[in-house]
Length: 486
Image (tube, rainbow, N blue to C red; front, side):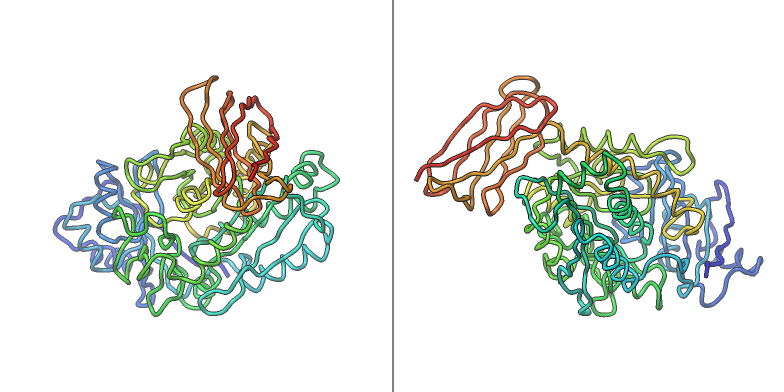
């Protein structure tokens, strides 16, 4: 059943003498919209100094729903006290809508039970290409499901690159599940029919986790359509502020239980966080995309202001190109790429920062849909449009796996993979200075995306010798055989 939200716009109204919440309530009641049960008020503010005012709003522990970078507006889900704070600060109120907390999303969106059934059905239909695993339990003991897709699935090949897609860190972001589901459907139904899809599946290990925050999503359907966090206590923890790297370090999350970006009592305190960390450690993806909504942006590490990745030429270059391939909902342009503080506000304890820092995975967040669509747009009107618009982005990453990179396995004198090995990479010609330290997988395998150029690559492991070699990459994967002598 569709929620019956209505919209009233007020262009350039600055409420000086009347509390913002009171004014909104009065206006809504005059048109029969405001009801006692309508306890979500979504307001849109026009920002005259976007970066400064965004920081103000974030520091006030406001629930920031999404932004429009073109017209410098921000959507907030507010309560009465927060509305009064905004009024005192003199923000321009330009739009609002009221939503009853019990007004669930369109019933065609997915529930945890539907996700489990869908994934198991795919695995049953395509047993040579797909298998489904529960990768762990949520806080409430619910399974978190992932599907692994690759050619000849019964015989794992350590030389294949791994790529990872996940959806719904935040429970209310129902469209973030639909893009990974569309990826699964495309890869399995088009295998053997489309040459490019067939190559992607045969050449790679593709891991897809469509719905991560299963407990929170159940709460969205049962009691609160705007619930964002997991279900810790009666307040919840924002899983995507709970990862260990830079946790609670740069005012990129909140210490208040009531805040939507509450980071938890300690780093990795939540079982969901641990599930994701264990999965990433196991599969060691080359690329990953974490889907969110909404704002029509592509985010890459790092989340704290002023910080950039040492390998920004690769990370930012690929992120910018990926954003350029996603058409905005109104058809007038393309997504915008940048770090979280460049586009929104500082974020600490986020998944993509942890993935990059811990394993040199190249990770991205894609915030799908515009402020006009919001968290829960009409399924029939927007689902297929959205997944179609985002498809060129994940297809581009799968294509990029065939591009400039090095891979191989570090072995000892007995030909066995070496644990705790490191790869040090320095570009010697073909571009600007580029240095990367990459931790090899537990079995000694490595798979590193690089810009084109010539590199001096040094391999080492504790107790074994060190070996250096020169490698040139120019648009393709280059295998580098390595033996370290005890």
